[in-house]
Amino acid sequence: NNLKIDFATLDDFIGGKFLKDKNNVYYVDDNGMRVLNDADVKTFERFQQEYTFYKDKNNIYYEDKKLEGVDRKTFESTSLFGKDKSNIYYKNKKLGLTSKNFQIISDIENIFKNAEGIHLINDEDVKETGAENIKIVPMESKNVDLKTFENLSTPIFSTNYYKDKNNIYYR
Image (tube, rainbow, N blue to C red; front, side, top):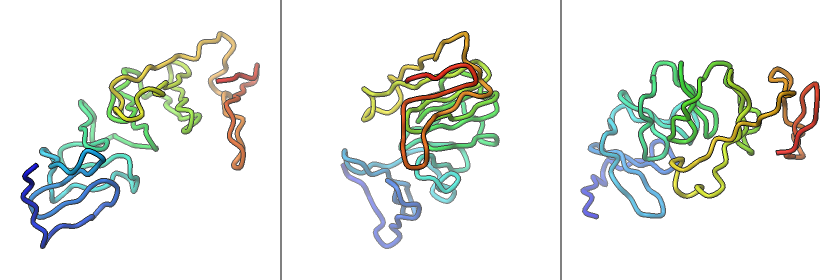
């Protein structure tokens, strides 16, 4: 890997896995350091003070991957999830679900709801490979009440149990 780094201007300006010099933005992980080819050096920064999503004047990124088809003007992020006026994103993947009424129920368990129902992201096998192979599992139950569905965790104790006005559920 023949990177031509300008060490006089090299800066870890945003933390996380990124560095930049006057010419390039670099992504650093266990596979080494590489140039983020499409990144605009002058405008590249963390998105909303998080270390998950990043942006420049043209794109939004999850790690070193561009989010395809994202509306930059309406994009918001929370942890590994993002949304724009139309879509929900998990890591770098557009989920194909509407962002209408999007709400994260459990960040740790990757459970969220939207206008279409309650969904679980199953990414147990893809922790290292990004979001290409995730499975979206609808939590189907005719009795689930979307308005009152919530996690039973406390600030000290995390749990896989959920409740709504009708029932208690286990992940």
